[in-house]
Length: 477
Image 1 (cartoon, rainbow, N blue to C red):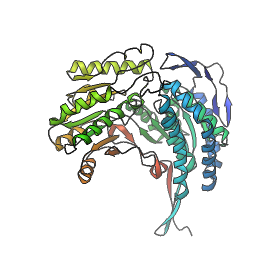
Image 2: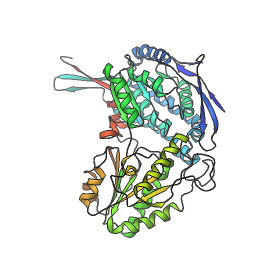
Image 3: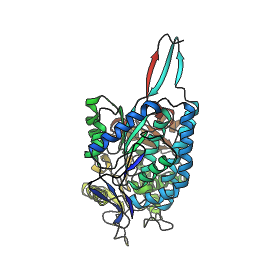
Image 4: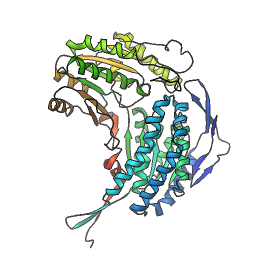
Protein backbone atom coordinates (compact mmCIF):
# COMPACT_ATOMS: atom_id res chain seq x y z
CA UNK A 1 0.00 0.00 0.00
CA UNK A 2 1.23 3.49 -0.84
CA UNK A 3 1.25 5.59 2.32
CA UNK A 4 1.42 9.14 0.94
CA UNK A 5 0.34 11.23 3.91
CA UNK A 6 2.77 14.18 3.54
CA UNK A 7 2.22 17.51 1.84
CA UNK A 8 4.97 19.42 0.03
CA UNK A 9 5.38 23.01 1.21
CA UNK A 10 8.34 25.38 0.76
CA UNK A 11 10.71 22.70 -0.53
CA UNK A 12 10.01 20.18 2.23
CA UNK A 13 7.80 17.16 2.85
CA UNK A 14 5.56 18.12 5.75
CA UNK A 15 3.61 15.63 7.88
CA UNK A 16 0.29 17.26 8.79
CA UNK A 17 -0.79 16.60 12.35
CA UNK A 18 -4.23 15.37 13.47
CA UNK A 19 -5.59 15.19 9.93
CA UNK A 20 -8.27 12.95 8.55
CA UNK A 21 -6.90 10.23 6.28
CA UNK A 22 -8.55 9.21 3.04
CA UNK A 23 -8.20 5.74 1.55
CA UNK A 24 -7.45 5.55 -2.17
CA UNK A 25 -9.35 2.65 -3.76
CA UNK A 26 -8.02 0.55 -6.63
CA UNK A 27 -11.06 0.43 -8.96
CA UNK A 28 -10.06 -2.92 -10.45
CA UNK A 29 -10.02 -4.73 -7.09
CA UNK A 30 -12.12 -2.44 -4.86
CA UNK A 31 -9.27 -2.76 -2.35
CA UNK A 32 -7.25 -0.01 -0.66
CA UNK A 33 -4.24 1.03 -2.76
CA UNK A 34 -2.99 3.81 -0.51
CA UNK A 35 -3.90 6.68 1.75
CA UNK A 36 -3.44 10.44 1.87
CA UNK A 37 -3.97 13.20 4.41
CA UNK A 38 -6.80 15.67 3.87
CA UNK A 39 -5.75 19.30 3.82
CA UNK A 40 -7.37 22.42 5.22
CA UNK A 41 -7.49 26.12 4.43
CA UNK A 42 -4.64 26.60 6.90
CA UNK A 43 -2.44 24.31 4.81
CA UNK A 44 -3.31 26.34 1.73
CA UNK A 45 -2.36 29.53 3.58
CA UNK A 46 1.08 28.08 4.38
CA UNK A 47 1.60 26.93 0.79
CA UNK A 48 0.53 30.28 -0.65
CA UNK A 49 2.86 32.15 1.71
CA UNK A 50 5.74 30.00 0.49
CA UNK A 51 4.80 30.49 -3.16
CA UNK A 52 4.42 34.25 -2.70
CA UNK A 53 7.89 34.53 -1.16
CA UNK A 54 9.45 32.29 -3.81
CA UNK A 55 7.91 34.34 -6.62
CA UNK A 56 10.13 37.31 -5.76
CA UNK A 57 13.26 35.47 -6.90
CA UNK A 58 11.86 32.84 -9.28
CA UNK A 59 10.10 35.43 -11.43
CA UNK A 60 13.53 36.94 -12.12
CA UNK A 61 15.08 33.70 -13.38
CA UNK A 62 16.46 34.09 -16.88
CA UNK A 63 15.03 32.20 -19.83
CA UNK A 64 18.12 29.99 -19.81
CA UNK A 65 17.78 29.22 -16.11
CA UNK A 66 14.16 28.15 -16.59
CA UNK A 67 15.19 25.98 -19.56
CA UNK A 68 17.79 24.25 -17.40
CA UNK A 69 15.18 23.62 -14.71
CA UNK A 70 12.78 22.04 -17.20
CA UNK A 71 15.62 19.90 -18.54
CA UNK A 72 16.38 18.67 -15.01
CA UNK A 73 12.70 17.85 -14.48
CA UNK A 74 12.63 15.80 -17.69
CA UNK A 75 15.69 13.82 -16.60
CA UNK A 76 14.22 13.09 -13.17
CA UNK A 77 10.83 12.21 -14.69
CA UNK A 78 12.37 9.56 -16.95
CA UNK A 79 13.80 7.72 -13.96
CA UNK A 80 10.40 7.54 -12.24
CA UNK A 81 8.14 7.09 -15.27
CA UNK A 82 7.53 3.36 -14.74
CA UNK A 83 6.45 3.91 -11.12
CA UNK A 84 4.19 6.79 -12.16
CA UNK A 85 2.54 4.54 -14.75
CA UNK A 86 2.01 1.76 -12.18
CA UNK A 87 0.48 4.26 -9.73
CA UNK A 88 -1.95 5.50 -12.39
CA UNK A 89 -3.11 1.93 -13.04
CA UNK A 90 -3.59 1.39 -9.31
CA UNK A 91 -5.45 4.62 -8.61
CA UNK A 92 -7.76 4.97 -11.62
CA UNK A 93 -7.67 1.66 -13.47
CA UNK A 94 -6.02 2.61 -16.76
CA UNK A 95 -4.69 -0.52 -18.52
CA UNK A 96 -0.95 -1.06 -18.20
CA UNK A 97 -0.35 -0.31 -21.90
CA UNK A 98 -2.23 2.99 -21.67
CA UNK A 99 -0.59 4.06 -18.40
CA UNK A 100 2.86 3.50 -19.86
CA UNK A 101 2.46 4.69 -23.45
CA UNK A 102 0.07 7.60 -22.92
CA UNK A 103 -0.78 8.46 -19.33
CA UNK A 104 2.69 8.65 -17.77
CA UNK A 105 4.36 9.56 -21.06
CA UNK A 106 2.12 12.58 -21.54
CA UNK A 107 3.39 14.31 -18.42
CA UNK A 108 6.96 14.01 -19.65
CA UNK A 109 6.01 15.24 -23.11
CA UNK A 110 4.44 18.43 -21.72
CA UNK A 111 7.73 19.38 -20.05
CA UNK A 112 9.64 18.61 -23.25
CA UNK A 113 7.15 20.63 -25.30
CA UNK A 114 7.43 23.58 -22.92
CA UNK A 115 11.20 23.56 -23.41
CA UNK A 116 10.75 23.87 -27.17
CA UNK A 117 8.30 26.76 -26.82
CA UNK A 118 10.46 28.52 -24.23
CA UNK A 119 13.55 28.50 -26.46
CA UNK A 120 11.91 30.81 -29.01
CA UNK A 121 9.30 32.64 -26.93
CA UNK A 122 9.58 36.45 -26.99
CA UNK A 123 9.03 37.91 -23.53
CA UNK A 124 10.03 41.40 -24.68
CA UNK A 125 9.64 43.09 -28.07
CA UNK A 126 9.11 46.45 -29.74
CA UNK A 127 5.66 47.58 -30.89
CA UNK A 128 6.06 50.88 -32.73
CA UNK A 129 7.89 53.08 -30.20
CA UNK A 130 6.80 51.08 -27.13
CA UNK A 131 8.51 48.10 -25.54
CA UNK A 132 6.09 45.29 -24.68
CA UNK A 133 7.03 42.99 -21.83
CA UNK A 134 5.31 39.76 -20.88
CA UNK A 135 5.77 39.03 -17.19
CA UNK A 136 4.65 36.09 -14.99
CA UNK A 137 1.14 36.51 -13.60
CA UNK A 138 2.19 35.54 -10.06
CA UNK A 139 1.16 32.74 -7.71
CA UNK A 140 -1.03 30.20 -9.52
CA UNK A 141 -3.48 27.74 -7.99
CA UNK A 142 -3.99 24.43 -9.81
CA UNK A 143 -6.85 22.01 -9.24
CA UNK A 144 -6.35 18.89 -11.34
CA UNK A 145 -8.53 15.85 -12.17
CA UNK A 146 -8.29 12.07 -11.85
CA UNK A 147 -8.85 10.90 -15.43
CA UNK A 148 -5.44 11.95 -16.84
CA UNK A 149 -3.67 12.83 -13.58
CA UNK A 150 -0.11 13.65 -14.70
CA UNK A 151 -1.14 14.81 -18.16
CA UNK A 152 -3.38 17.50 -16.73
CA UNK A 153 -0.86 18.79 -14.22
CA UNK A 154 1.93 18.63 -16.84
CA UNK A 155 0.11 20.92 -19.25
CA UNK A 156 -0.40 23.47 -16.45
CA UNK A 157 2.81 23.13 -14.50
CA UNK A 158 5.26 23.13 -17.41
CA UNK A 159 4.21 26.52 -18.83
CA UNK A 160 3.88 27.98 -15.34
CA UNK A 161 7.49 27.13 -14.55
CA UNK A 162 8.62 28.16 -18.04
CA UNK A 163 7.13 31.63 -17.58
CA UNK A 164 8.37 32.21 -14.01
CA UNK A 165 5.20 31.59 -11.98
CA UNK A 166 4.97 29.80 -8.65
CA UNK A 167 2.34 27.20 -7.82
CA UNK A 168 0.00 25.83 -5.17
CA UNK A 169 -1.48 22.56 -6.41
CA UNK A 170 -4.31 20.28 -5.31
CA UNK A 171 -4.42 16.93 -7.13
CA UNK A 172 -7.63 14.92 -7.26
CA UNK A 173 -8.22 13.08 -4.00
CA UNK A 174 -9.59 10.18 -6.06
CA UNK A 175 -6.28 9.59 -7.88
CA UNK A 176 -3.49 11.32 -5.91
CA UNK A 177 -0.79 8.63 -5.99
CA UNK A 178 0.87 9.60 -9.29
CA UNK A 179 0.74 13.25 -8.23
CA UNK A 180 2.81 12.42 -5.15
CA UNK A 181 5.42 10.73 -7.35
CA UNK A 182 5.48 13.71 -9.71
CA UNK A 183 6.10 15.98 -6.74
CA UNK A 184 9.05 13.76 -5.84
CA UNK A 185 10.34 14.26 -9.39
CA UNK A 186 10.17 18.04 -8.99
CA UNK A 187 11.97 17.88 -5.65
CA UNK A 188 14.73 15.65 -7.05
CA UNK A 189 15.10 17.94 -10.07
CA UNK A 190 15.94 20.86 -7.79
CA UNK A 191 12.85 23.03 -8.14
CA UNK A 192 13.59 25.90 -5.72
CA UNK A 193 11.75 25.90 -2.36
CA UNK A 194 8.29 27.43 -2.53
CA UNK A 195 8.07 27.37 -6.32
CA UNK A 196 5.75 24.32 -6.37
CA UNK A 197 3.67 23.36 -3.33
CA UNK A 198 1.25 20.40 -3.15
CA UNK A 199 -1.68 19.98 -0.76
CA UNK A 200 -3.99 16.97 -0.89
CA UNK A 201 -7.66 17.32 -0.04
CA UNK A 202 -11.14 17.70 -1.43
CA UNK A 203 -12.78 20.50 -3.40
CA UNK A 204 -14.90 22.08 -0.64
CA UNK A 205 -11.96 22.43 1.77
CA UNK A 206 -8.76 22.79 -0.27
CA UNK A 207 -10.10 23.60 -3.74
CA UNK A 208 -12.27 26.45 -2.53
CA UNK A 209 -9.46 27.83 -0.37
CA UNK A 210 -7.21 27.94 -3.43
CA UNK A 211 -9.86 29.51 -5.68
CA UNK A 212 -10.72 32.22 -3.16
CA UNK A 213 -7.24 33.02 -1.82
CA UNK A 214 -6.41 36.73 -2.19
CA UNK A 215 -2.69 36.06 -2.78
CA UNK A 216 -3.29 33.73 -5.71
CA UNK A 217 -3.39 35.69 -8.97
CA UNK A 218 -4.58 32.88 -11.24
CA UNK A 219 -6.47 29.61 -10.80
CA UNK A 220 -6.43 26.88 -13.45
CA UNK A 221 -9.01 24.13 -13.08
CA UNK A 222 -9.77 20.95 -15.00
CA UNK A 223 -12.90 18.98 -14.15
CA UNK A 224 -16.66 19.02 -14.43
CA UNK A 225 -18.62 22.05 -15.57
CA UNK A 226 -20.51 22.03 -12.27
CA UNK A 227 -17.28 22.24 -10.26
CA UNK A 228 -15.87 24.81 -12.68
CA UNK A 229 -18.80 27.08 -11.94
CA UNK A 230 -18.03 26.84 -8.21
CA UNK A 231 -14.35 27.67 -8.84
CA UNK A 232 -15.30 30.77 -10.85
CA UNK A 233 -17.70 31.91 -8.13
CA UNK A 234 -15.04 31.46 -5.42
CA UNK A 235 -12.50 33.37 -7.53
CA UNK A 236 -14.71 36.30 -8.51
CA UNK A 237 -14.34 38.48 -5.38
CA UNK A 238 -10.54 38.60 -5.74
CA UNK A 239 -10.65 39.40 -9.50
CA UNK A 240 -8.13 36.68 -10.27
CA UNK A 241 -7.63 35.17 -13.69
CA UNK A 242 -9.52 31.89 -14.15
CA UNK A 243 -8.84 29.32 -16.85
CA UNK A 244 -10.94 26.17 -17.07
CA UNK A 245 -10.96 22.98 -19.10
CA UNK A 246 -14.35 21.43 -18.45
CA UNK A 247 -16.76 18.89 -19.90
CA UNK A 248 -17.60 17.87 -23.43
CA UNK A 249 -20.14 16.10 -25.60
CA UNK A 250 -18.13 16.05 -28.79
CA UNK A 251 -19.72 15.34 -32.18
CA UNK A 252 -18.13 12.96 -34.67
CA UNK A 253 -19.52 13.71 -38.14
CA UNK A 254 -18.94 10.98 -40.70
CA UNK A 255 -19.75 12.31 -44.16
CA UNK A 256 -21.64 10.49 -46.88
CA UNK A 257 -18.91 10.58 -49.54
CA UNK A 258 -16.69 7.95 -47.91
CA UNK A 259 -16.20 4.58 -49.59
CA UNK A 260 -17.43 1.50 -47.72
CA UNK A 261 -13.90 0.74 -46.54
CA UNK A 262 -13.16 4.31 -45.41
CA UNK A 263 -16.60 4.59 -43.77
CA UNK A 264 -15.95 1.41 -41.77
CA UNK A 265 -12.54 2.71 -40.72
CA UNK A 266 -14.00 6.03 -39.53
CA UNK A 267 -16.84 4.36 -37.61
CA UNK A 268 -14.57 1.75 -36.04
CA UNK A 269 -12.00 4.37 -35.08
CA UNK A 270 -14.67 6.49 -33.40
CA UNK A 271 -15.93 3.51 -31.39
CA UNK A 272 -12.44 2.52 -30.21
CA UNK A 273 -11.65 6.11 -29.25
CA UNK A 274 -14.77 6.11 -27.06
CA UNK A 275 -13.43 3.06 -25.22
CA UNK A 276 -9.91 4.40 -24.61
CA UNK A 277 -9.44 5.17 -20.89
CA UNK A 278 -12.87 3.56 -20.38
CA UNK A 279 -14.48 6.59 -22.00
CA UNK A 280 -13.23 8.91 -19.25
CA UNK A 281 -12.03 11.62 -21.62
CA UNK A 282 -13.52 15.11 -21.77
CA UNK A 283 -12.89 15.28 -25.53
CA UNK A 284 -14.35 11.83 -26.31
CA UNK A 285 -16.31 11.60 -29.61
CA UNK A 286 -19.46 10.61 -27.75
CA UNK A 287 -22.02 11.59 -30.42
CA UNK A 288 -21.44 9.85 -33.75
CA UNK A 289 -23.42 11.35 -36.66
CA UNK A 290 -23.89 9.27 -39.82
CA UNK A 291 -26.09 9.70 -42.91
CA UNK A 292 -29.55 8.19 -42.45
CA UNK A 293 -29.07 5.93 -45.47
CA UNK A 294 -25.87 4.47 -43.93
CA UNK A 295 -27.16 3.96 -40.39
CA UNK A 296 -27.51 0.18 -40.74
CA UNK A 297 -24.02 0.02 -42.23
CA UNK A 298 -22.63 1.92 -39.22
CA UNK A 299 -24.47 -0.35 -36.77
CA UNK A 300 -22.87 -3.46 -38.27
CA UNK A 301 -19.40 -1.94 -38.08
CA UNK A 302 -19.98 -0.94 -34.46
CA UNK A 303 -21.12 -4.42 -33.40
CA UNK A 304 -18.17 -6.03 -35.15
CA UNK A 305 -15.70 -3.55 -33.63
CA UNK A 306 -16.93 -3.95 -30.07
CA UNK A 307 -16.91 -7.74 -30.34
CA UNK A 308 -13.11 -7.42 -30.46
CA UNK A 309 -12.67 -4.86 -27.66
CA UNK A 310 -11.46 -6.59 -24.51
CA UNK A 311 -12.49 -5.27 -21.08
CA UNK A 312 -10.68 -6.64 -18.05
CA UNK A 313 -8.12 -6.33 -15.29
CA UNK A 314 -5.78 -3.49 -16.25
CA UNK A 315 -2.58 -5.47 -15.72
CA UNK A 316 -3.70 -8.37 -17.92
CA UNK A 317 -2.21 -8.73 -21.39
CA UNK A 318 -4.49 -7.87 -24.31
CA UNK A 319 -6.93 -5.77 -22.27
CA UNK A 320 -8.05 -2.65 -24.12
CA UNK A 321 -10.23 -1.05 -21.41
CA UNK A 322 -10.17 -1.37 -17.64
CA UNK A 323 -12.66 -0.26 -14.99
CA UNK A 324 -13.96 3.25 -14.44
CA UNK A 325 -12.46 5.16 -11.57
CA UNK A 326 -14.92 4.67 -8.70
CA UNK A 327 -18.21 3.25 -7.51
CA UNK A 328 -19.73 6.73 -7.69
CA UNK A 329 -18.70 7.08 -11.32
CA UNK A 330 -19.87 3.54 -12.12
CA UNK A 331 -23.31 4.23 -10.70
CA UNK A 332 -23.64 7.52 -12.59
CA UNK A 333 -22.89 5.71 -15.84
CA UNK A 334 -25.39 2.97 -15.03
CA UNK A 335 -28.10 5.55 -14.32
CA UNK A 336 -27.48 7.25 -17.66
CA UNK A 337 -27.50 3.95 -19.56
CA UNK A 338 -30.84 3.19 -17.96
CA UNK A 339 -32.05 6.67 -18.88
CA UNK A 340 -31.22 5.93 -22.53
CA UNK A 341 -33.24 2.73 -22.39
CA UNK A 342 -36.15 4.51 -20.70
CA UNK A 343 -36.11 7.30 -23.29
CA UNK A 344 -36.52 4.80 -26.10
CA UNK A 345 -33.09 4.80 -27.71
CA UNK A 346 -32.20 1.50 -29.37
CA UNK A 347 -29.66 -0.41 -27.28
CA UNK A 348 -27.31 -1.77 -29.92
CA UNK A 349 -24.52 -3.17 -27.72
CA UNK A 350 -23.89 -3.37 -23.97
CA UNK A 351 -26.31 -2.13 -21.34
CA UNK A 352 -26.56 -1.91 -17.57
CA UNK A 353 -24.55 -4.10 -15.23
CA UNK A 354 -20.99 -5.39 -15.32
CA UNK A 355 -19.44 -7.46 -18.10
CA UNK A 356 -19.68 -11.21 -17.59
CA UNK A 357 -16.92 -12.55 -15.35
CA UNK A 358 -16.04 -9.13 -13.92
CA UNK A 359 -18.17 -8.98 -10.81
CA UNK A 360 -15.43 -7.36 -8.70
CA UNK A 361 -14.23 -3.95 -9.83
CA UNK A 362 -16.02 -0.98 -11.38
CA UNK A 363 -16.29 -2.37 -14.90
CA UNK A 364 -18.76 -1.03 -17.45
CA UNK A 365 -20.01 -2.77 -20.58
CA UNK A 366 -19.01 -0.75 -23.67
CA UNK A 367 -22.43 0.49 -24.72
CA UNK A 368 -23.85 1.96 -27.91
CA UNK A 369 -27.32 3.44 -28.39
CA UNK A 370 -28.62 3.84 -31.93
CA UNK A 371 -31.43 6.03 -33.25
CA UNK A 372 -30.67 8.61 -30.58
CA UNK A 373 -32.51 11.91 -30.63
CA UNK A 374 -30.29 14.87 -29.77
CA UNK A 375 -32.84 15.99 -27.16
CA UNK A 376 -32.39 12.79 -25.14
CA UNK A 377 -30.59 12.95 -21.82
CA UNK A 378 -27.84 10.64 -23.05
CA UNK A 379 -27.16 13.02 -25.95
CA UNK A 380 -27.11 16.14 -23.75
CA UNK A 381 -25.17 15.06 -20.66
CA UNK A 382 -21.53 14.08 -20.41
CA UNK A 383 -21.63 10.40 -19.43
CA UNK A 384 -17.85 10.05 -18.93
CA UNK A 385 -17.84 6.34 -19.63
CA UNK A 386 -17.67 3.99 -22.66
CA UNK A 387 -21.13 4.95 -23.92
CA UNK A 388 -21.64 6.09 -27.52
CA UNK A 389 -24.72 7.79 -28.98
CA UNK A 390 -25.34 7.07 -32.68
CA UNK A 391 -27.43 9.69 -34.44
CA UNK A 392 -28.45 9.95 -38.08
CA UNK A 393 -28.86 13.03 -40.28
CA UNK A 394 -30.68 13.76 -43.52
CA UNK A 395 -28.20 16.23 -44.97
CA UNK A 396 -24.97 18.01 -44.09
CA UNK A 397 -26.68 21.14 -42.81
CA UNK A 398 -28.62 19.04 -40.30
CA UNK A 399 -25.42 17.27 -39.24
CA UNK A 400 -23.71 20.59 -38.47
CA UNK A 401 -26.80 21.86 -36.64
CA UNK A 402 -26.94 18.72 -34.47
CA UNK A 403 -23.19 18.93 -33.82
CA UNK A 404 -23.51 22.49 -32.53
CA UNK A 405 -26.74 21.86 -30.59
CA UNK A 406 -24.99 21.30 -27.27
CA UNK A 407 -23.93 23.31 -24.23
CA UNK A 408 -20.40 22.08 -24.79
CA UNK A 409 -17.69 22.91 -27.31
CA UNK A 410 -14.46 21.18 -26.38
CA UNK A 411 -13.75 19.04 -29.42
CA UNK A 412 -15.16 17.75 -32.68
CA UNK A 413 -14.36 15.13 -35.30
CA UNK A 414 -15.03 15.09 -39.06
CA UNK A 415 -14.26 12.37 -41.61
CA UNK A 416 -14.81 12.59 -45.34
CA UNK A 417 -13.30 11.79 -48.74
CA UNK A 418 -12.71 15.31 -50.06
CA UNK A 419 -10.19 17.36 -48.06
CA UNK A 420 -11.63 20.79 -48.91
CA UNK A 421 -15.14 19.58 -48.12
CA UNK A 422 -14.07 18.14 -44.77
CA UNK A 423 -12.25 21.36 -43.90
CA UNK A 424 -15.34 23.42 -44.73
CA UNK A 425 -17.49 21.30 -42.41
CA UNK A 426 -14.87 21.34 -39.65
CA UNK A 427 -14.74 25.15 -39.70
CA UNK A 428 -18.46 25.29 -38.90
CA UNK A 429 -18.24 23.24 -35.69
CA UNK A 430 -18.20 25.42 -32.59
CA UNK A 431 -15.41 23.73 -30.62
CA UNK A 432 -11.86 24.42 -29.56
CA UNK A 433 -10.20 21.46 -31.30
CA UNK A 434 -11.27 19.55 -34.42
CA UNK A 435 -9.82 16.17 -35.46
CA UNK A 436 -9.95 15.78 -39.24
CA UNK A 437 -9.94 12.29 -40.76
CA UNK A 438 -8.67 10.60 -37.63
CA UNK A 439 -5.88 13.06 -36.83
CA UNK A 440 -4.30 12.26 -33.47
CA UNK A 441 -3.60 14.62 -30.58
CA UNK A 442 -0.88 17.22 -31.10
CA UNK A 443 0.50 18.16 -27.69
CA UNK A 444 1.79 21.50 -28.98
CA UNK A 445 -1.65 22.55 -30.28
CA UNK A 446 -3.80 24.78 -28.03
CA UNK A 447 -6.36 22.76 -26.07
CA UNK A 448 -9.53 24.22 -24.58
CA UNK A 449 -13.17 24.77 -25.32
CA UNK A 450 -16.05 27.03 -26.25
CA UNK A 451 -19.23 27.59 -24.23
CA UNK A 452 -19.60 25.37 -21.13
CA UNK A 453 -16.40 23.53 -21.98
CA UNK A 454 -14.38 26.31 -20.41
CA UNK A 455 -12.14 29.25 -21.21
CA UNK A 456 -8.46 29.77 -21.89
CA UNK A 457 -6.06 27.41 -23.66
CA UNK A 458 -3.43 24.94 -22.55
CA UNK A 459 -0.33 23.73 -24.45
CA UNK A 460 1.94 25.43 -26.96
CA UNK A 461 2.62 29.19 -27.12
CA UNK A 462 -1.06 29.90 -26.39
CA UNK A 463 -0.68 27.99 -23.13
CA UNK A 464 2.22 30.25 -22.15
CA UNK A 465 0.10 33.34 -22.76
CA UNK A 466 -2.34 32.32 -20.01
CA UNK A 467 0.42 32.66 -17.40
CA UNK A 468 1.63 36.09 -18.46
CA UNK A 469 0.66 39.71 -17.87
CA UNK A 470 1.37 42.33 -20.55
CA UNK A 471 3.25 45.49 -19.64
CA UNK A 472 3.70 48.46 -21.99
CA UNK A 473 7.00 50.32 -21.38
CA UNK A 474 6.57 53.75 -22.96
CA UNK A 475 9.71 55.69 -23.75
CA UNK A 476 11.99 52.79 -22.89
CA UNK A 477 15.34 53.14 -24.70
